[in-house]
Image 1 (cartoon, one colour):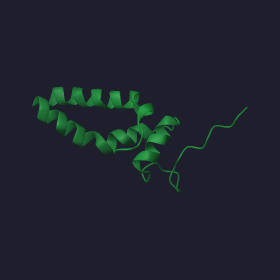
Image 2 (tube, rainbow, N blue to C red; image 1 turned 90 degrees about the vertical axis):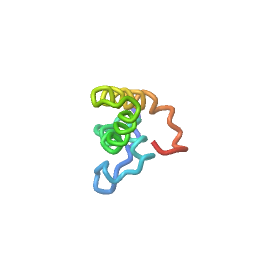
Image 3 (cartoon, one colour; image 1 turned 120 degrees about the horizontal axis):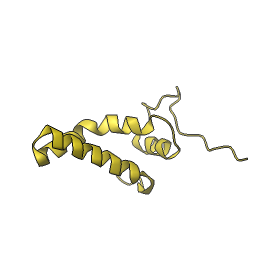
Length: 84
């Protein structure tokens, strides 16, 4: 049996210190909490952009959720040549 590849982590074992590329790698490796941290870091700007498009809270919240769902599904195709 082959041992799984180590997942990227900060020296103290926390995910908070990771950059975007390492955090994406952690998500792809199945590290618990990695995508949650991506969502936390980007939640407000994504929501505000959605709100500018639709003009109300409920629709902006729904759109934000859709954005993160699509981001999660497409994470394997992220090449890291741009910021998240």
